[in-house]
Length: 115
Length: 112
Image (cartoon, rainbow over the protein chains, first blue to last red):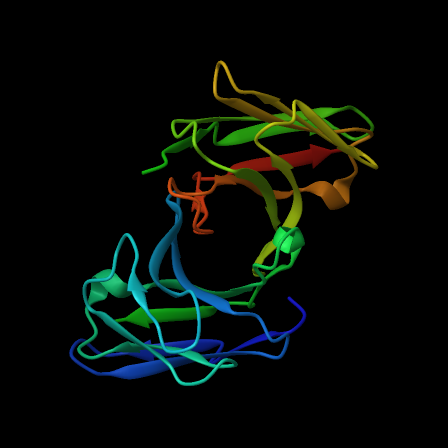
């Protein structure tokens, strides 16, 4: 997981609370992603940012907002947390530069529980 | 969009070969990928194959791609206990933008 940091590592929220998950990469990658991982479901894309200043919805965007603050940072916000958002959240950073498709890094994850 | 299917579990003996299988629906995927996730960690890209290739070998890993059947496999030779993990296959979305769509993952258990 070199180069992608996520904070916090663990978080417990009550229903209705808000919070922001932070992600930062120091590899000068253009594209960043937020996924959630639920047991038996694989990873599902929430939002992604192909480049600084752009964001797009993924498969499961409802209940989330994102912000690509600069090239390094991509944050995920839960405005009003719900128990269905209990999950492990992963941020990924990918270089898309010709043949460099093998430059992909995932953060260590944020384990979120909503009570 | 891409749908990716994998079997959920595989159990092998240490030293044997492991073969993890995956089927996908989107034939326009440019790249297909294999990832490894160890307990409590994020995903690590293991290898990838370009869609116009049939096979790619990287040390103990061999990826086979059957485009006609839309079938991808990952063979791990001489499987070790350290290979115990969840393995995900993924394909690009249609349209060429790099947005990997993941399967549900195969849990590989390696026992002595």
